[in-house]
Length: 307
Image (cartoon, rainbow, N blue to C red):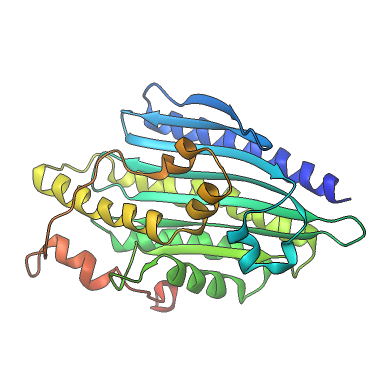
């Protein structure tokens, strides 16, 4: 039964990658994604699809991977000792989009499934994933739309699901060394197995299928907003925070590198350009200060009379 479950999830994820790439390429209107298939020596492989220098996206990627092996790295079993001595499969799709226009938010998402097996024992499995939004010049209505779509995706699974996974996202995408969130959040879940396989898998599909409806309307509203050197400099400065989070805090990046994943695909999430400046602070009451004042902290977006 475990392999039937794995096969079903893998079919969904491959189809999701196809659908995401098709719709994002159509929105970009440029040359589209190029595919790079790869094989992992220890077991598995994937297909990385990357778009660069597009009409909309300066860089983006939608990656599928399926890696497996006879044992997990010590870093994984130290945190989860019940996984010691088990073979494993990890399958997922992850995506990140870095638009060129600073008024169009960066966005990230992923959905994944993990299963570990040992003869004579029940398999250990769980789902994880979510999506989050990182605007540089945020628009309040865009943030409300984003969270409404996230709430609606969660609604069939219980009234407590959106508040719980929204709060988890706020906590997860916190740059603790900066005491600020990476963006305005969304959904994050991990170790999801307490609903049974079918309901957990249905939730994963609901999250993956919701992304385009959450993101593309924002893209369409902001992609023609004029911008110049000031906005570009600020975008590159804030992209530095994106790099900091991915290299210091992100579990997926660390697991991928420690488990012998493909480095080029793992680091696909990095922006093409970023900058750091010592001791920089925005001018008071500037558009840049608005991001820091109102958006880089957890907020109950849909509890403020905005439903």
